[in-house]
Amino acid sequence: MSSNKIDRDCVVYIAGHRGLVGSAIWRHFEAQGFTRLVGATSAEVDLRDAAATEALLQRVRPDVVVDAAARVGGILANSTQPAEFMSDNLRIQVNLMDAAARVGVERFLFLGSSCIYPKMAEQPIREESLLTGPLEETNIAYAIAKIAGVIAVQSHRTEYARAWISAMPTNLYGPGDNFDPQSSHVLPALIRRFHEAARDGVSEVILWGTGTPRREFLHVDDLAEACLMLLENYDDGLPINVGTGTDVTIRELAEIVADITGFEGEIVQDTSKPDGTPRKLLDVSRIRSLGWESRIRLREGIESTYRWYVDNVDD
Image (cartoon, rainbow, N blue to C red; front, side, top):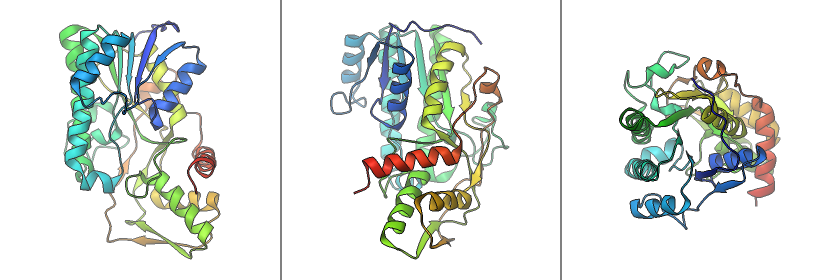
């Protein structure tokens, strides 16, 4: 572990700066006094294109790169589009790291996902569990791509002695999330469905699976804070978990969302649909040892995210 405060006047390139994660990181870095933040939309630069990515980094010459760019989605999207999830994420990561290496980027933060860990990993999941067992089948292509990113970071550290790191966030949510009914993750999907059900006077909402799987949820503003802390205080090849250290069942989550959105009907479980991993709670003792822990409580975070949804998405 090391402490290396980053100059607030250095050039920081945030890949995926318009997304849920990237936009939160941008807000936090700006609030912390960074004056030379750089971003490029996917329309401006396609990070799946090696030449375009190289040209961007050669022009920007960043001192720090945060890779928050990814193709993401929930169980439905992952299970029906595995080829795209594998291809897009592998290319984004490799292109960014190759280009960053060629322009001499000193600090690179790769953001992965807790789905990199084995389906039946011992709970809570320690960083050392990586590559110790089979993955969850419904998002294996995405998980393999993210594991490749972790190995790529380790490879750059080993071969070129670069201070590059990987962080593995748990399930994220917050303002700017994807609320699309076909491709969203579980929490934004529930917010949309319960809001529409309450608005339209629907008598029941159907949940996939048994409702018993347990999940951990981290507000994206907490992750953003963790990212800067890690860039300044963490220098190790082992990926580091970022989470809350607490979890809830999907049923409990649905009941919280129903209450916040004012849904008063019945919640029905469709047990013919898949549950996914039975539990996925991260061991966050490593990041806590650096002095960081999440601050935004789940209900508080869902309430603010719901307000954002109503103001910005609901039509």
